[in-house]
Length: 311
Image (cartoon, rainbow, N blue to C red):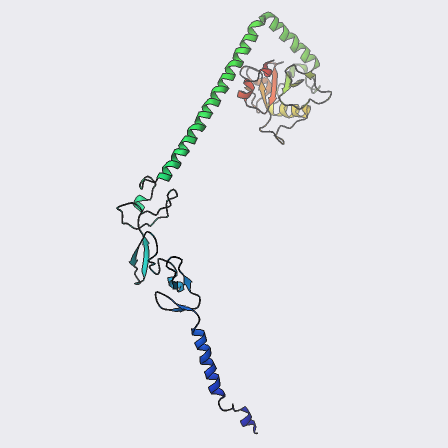
């Protein structure tokens, strides 16, 4: 057999291939479903959960094929001639289209005019609003009661302090204070390079459970506060004095773990007076040489109700 004869296909081969192709085409067209709206053969049809019909990707949505089983809907014809499902406002007597998202309370769709719960009389939203108002009223009542209790406690503390002061003889009280200041100045520690006439003496209390540094504290006060008699230069600012006192008590001016607020200095008075950190200790009005100050992270109002500060 010649090479041309060998390369030429045998008779019936082309016919056999054409028959097989037609058979495959028939099998291929047997797969898939025609769209119930446009009739397009779709090999991956989309069934509708409402009407149980099959549709192509263009008409898979209920509003795209005008689903007759869609609840609370009206059907209209869109600009392309395709039927579309349009939700109507749930308010009785209103036929406008529901163009906003459903209400969070009743889950019904409404038109823009009736979109607010008060406009369509939403019972669920009204109940939730009543609950919120009641909770807010309870919170306000609790706040008022707490404030009243705090004011009552402060008033009782004022009465106790006044009664205690009335029992003391003014002359004896003044003499005892002078003796106490004299003893405090004799045991006070500080920078020995400071001249005697420039020394400003303070009895420093620490409002914290931390014990005073060993060998530095005079004693623990009767009020339960660690106490130190110290002297500083009258020109030293309160901020620098705070740092020195924190070193003495082995605490930090900045809040540590479990602590809230910076360490501040208050003059022991009624009420306690905050010492400004940028002022020289000798220039602060009302602060006398030999007075008692308390270092605390609390506010002046909290210290005022603590009787131990005035012991």
